[in-house]
Length: 127
Image (tube, rainbow, N blue to C red; front, side, top):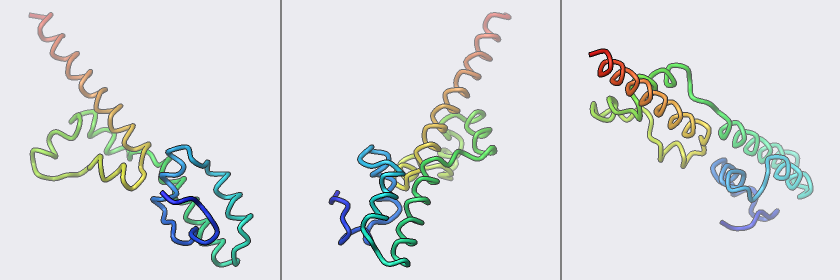
């Protein structure tokens, strides 16, 4: 990825800022400080700051409660994949920068697997 400079900062989209933050090339605050030091026009400055703030919100956005519950009941989206309904595409979520959602997807899917494993063990030990 090219370096962040005054000449190319307007070409950066939300996804570019997300990847800069996630790869720890820049922090949320350092990006905002750089933009203020570039002395852009008010309109351009507001546009870039808005993209950076949206990138930060995107990184931190959690799964909805309904999807959390669904991934506990149906770990790793097994049922939706079998039905041909790709409700949660991990690669797409990563590409768009929803890293917290992807992390929670794996956590709640493992909780679901543990839940079903405990049920199977209880049935085996009861008999």
